[in-house]
Amino acid sequence: MLKILFFAALRERLACASTTLDITGQHLTAREVLNKLASQSAHWQQHLANAELLCAVNQQLVDLSHPVAAGDELAFFPPVTGG
Image (cartoon, rainbow, N blue to C red; front, side, top):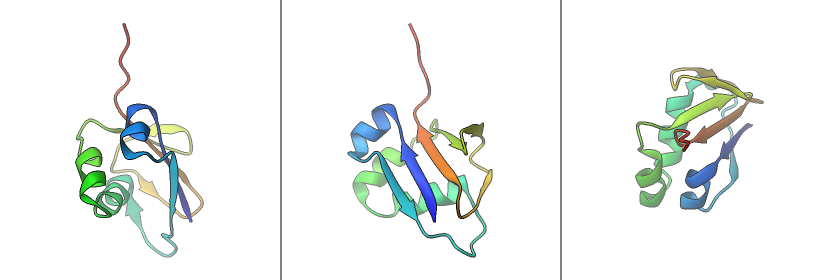
């Protein structure tokens, strides 16, 4: 099982803080997981299609091309801004 977390405005827009995805035996990248999630509904597709989303695997910031495995924690969040 892959644990997927959503943070900040993305969590609010999806109305979801976390979900899981069974990827046992699959070799996927973070981008491929993102695409699987986006295919769940038009609403999710709208908010997950943001090319600027950042991701982390096991609390380490990574590129969307990074591989994920069952047992990993994958987090998606919008770009950080400050002021």
